[in-house]
Length: 249
Image (cartoon, rainbow, N blue to C red; front, side, top):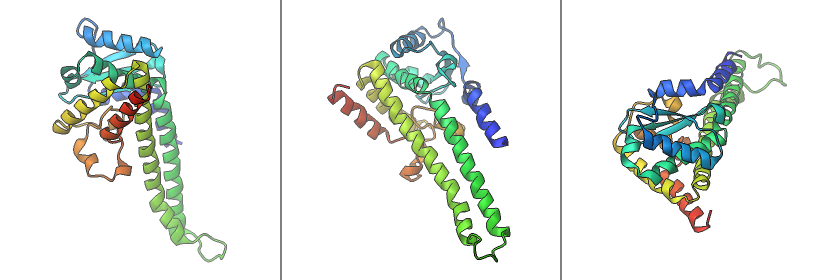
């Protein structure tokens, strides 16, 4: 119950938790007219309300969106993103983030977290049953099977969450390309972001790293197996986007 309460609170307070974790601050239109104009135009194209705009003073080019629904949405961008993107590339990144908002990915992620927590709870129960279960009854479960389930179930839950995270990135890319009417600006931006982000990793809470458009924890994920990655490889994302261009969206 306590774990589910945490999941619920994370969902309802997703915007404030994410911006606080990232060190993001609100930025006014007077201070960032180019950014506000781009966000407003992308929101209009997406048919969603104008989200609140936040700024992260980081040299790594990156961005994320959060909020439990389009009416309570936040888009945060880094100084590095504004420095290296042209107008179309910036709008492509914002369209990707608007895709997350429109697809209600915070809700989907919260449900996935609750399911993973439930799997882990069952695994813990299986572990205790294997250690202290009767074992003398022929109908009782095999304690070794219970122990194996206790060890593997949390891994399976993590794999499911990572797979879902990757699938939502692909879907947000597709939505962003459709919002822009052209996948190329987002494809170019992803290549730029990936190249620079590899040279400028930043200290980001790992629990929040999946929210960013490219993985901010460059060194950690590169060493993991492909199925443990929170973000799909950028080259795969760009290939998918450019295949959309060939098919005319």
